[in-house]
Image (cartoon, rainbow, N blue to C red; front, side):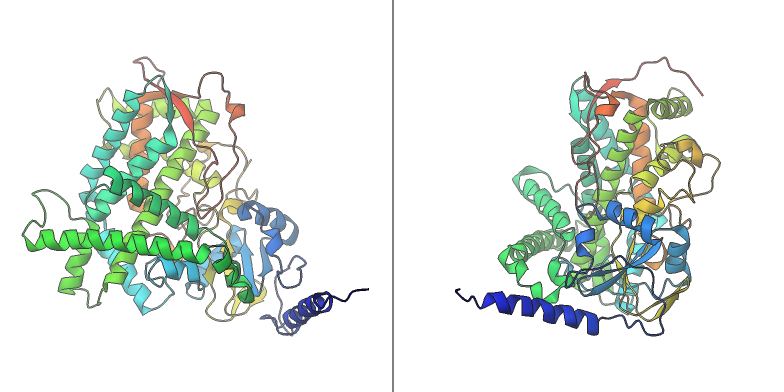
Length: 508
């Protein structure tokens, strides 16, 4: 019988790694109470149990192993939190301990060594750039200064829909263009999807999001890092990073040249993010030296967090309203009634639209755009509830599962905005039952900016139009399959027919 060397070496190789994994695991079980864990396989641990949609797979596992469970993804210990009590302990009681990010070679390659607010390690540097973001770019005064941009671009969206009335409209395309235009005007002072150059930039940003949502096997099984070279992932990261860097450099140089010519801004025009950041860089008013790479990373953070969360949330809202006609009717009645015959709804009208706010909350409960936010990592040993959690443990917070927890919500699978009408629960990070944009130190600082866009866009959509599914399509026919990636939306874009609303409707 012919002898093949690999018939001995390969099993031996696997056995050595299995032995190493058992004897030198990060977790030393002696005298420590660890959370329950599913059974793991050699080398890969529990990686095979993540599935295509981890928020769903982990939700099913949590039903068996509990709201706090420990997985081993390759060589990395990963905690999964799926209940309000566990998340409150992480994001409030021990928020500082869990305030850093695990290292990611993909993020480092795309975002200037993770120099933005979202992915940077917890450090003095992170505190400084977050302060810049909160106080200089996303303060209430600054957000208000962009009001004309929001209202103008939402009006442009309404006009675009009006031109396509009574025909099938790709609502995802319409909503994403609106969100892109607002964020790009606020961030860089102009829309980037104008002409051929703009198309390239839009594709680049889509590729950036796709790469950020790509599973990197080398992060969890270090000896498999070579896979990224053979499958082309490393080259994709380098190309996107290079092209985005060239684009951002050109944008910054445009601003520098314009400002040097004294064309800083026109009367009444708000400064865009680039101008504000250049002012900080030149004047150094914060006492923090803002390097160009940091400036560019902050700009990319704005696109990543802003565009995707806004249009994905709006699309989910429209999907749920089309699936729940009674909720659509109640929302239209409220908005049209409060409008009192006005030609245009403005941001001043939004404060009284309680059902509209309830619709947004209920949609975010069932369909958070980021069902599992960016992982955190413990900086020291910590006691979580009754469990001992060692330092360097990653944590995944399953926001999607928390929104469906029957201990927190009555009839959690039902779409019922009314549950929020007499409730103080909000999504701004203080109520752990509803944290689609995170909470604590690492919570999203752009919630006020995004929420006013979502509210105004939704109010104007239902004020101006009646929406229906394409002819012959029933709500039961909507394919609710989800895509994969860093954010989750329906796999297929939402197609609908819009008709101008009539003057007769029933007030609440």
